[in-house]
Length: 286
Image (cartoon, rainbow, N blue to C red; front, side, top):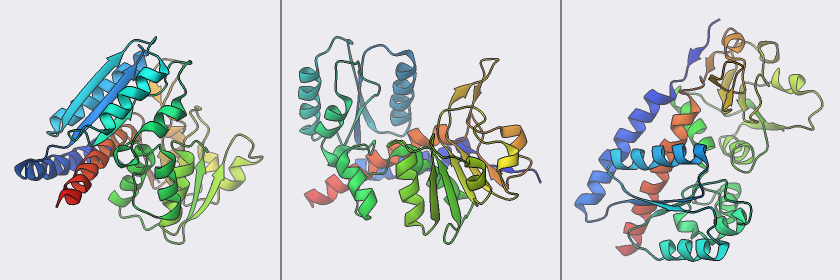
């Protein structure tokens, strides 16, 4: 068996085209969805991520604002800036790029964002909404994973899903989203004693720990669906995920590549969330 690739680039293009079409409809009604991206410091990776996010917004017709600040910016000044964006009717989504400089409490900044504009889905209110099944914003990376499963017509009901990783950004929300679709979910992490015993039972595996080759072919049952959220570098410096792609591809039925898999979907779902926020703002006005 050779796994079919779930092409994140192709799916992203489809979804972004729909975002652009929906944005055009909103614009015709006098409302342009707006995203503010705040970058503090000069982290090279963050600068690339931010640039890609802003470009994606512009390509889809959204209004985007990029605010760059020195690493010496105080926490109080950043919180004040967030509050100003909370009150800006032209901004429907606020994204403060992480990581922040060490002297700034990232959680405090995230909690300062109006939950109605929390398009990253990191606010405690967003986490609570996801847990209880209430309307809110889903974190973009696991949301993108769910769209990838949807794109292959995969029915999660009754399936066993194993999530490797328990971060607040991917692992935990991923497990909750799978649970909402009636999957039986196991969360594995650094203290799991026999990872292979769990993954061999899985119909779906999501690897999200940031560690190369955490999942190898002997750990995957034939026909499983494997989503690779990892972003690492191999010995040659090439981008790779958490999954041994070549080996697992010979066992799985579907697999996401790195690059070109989950990565493009993360930014796409940010646009989807920003558009949704704008739609909610328009409904509130009517």
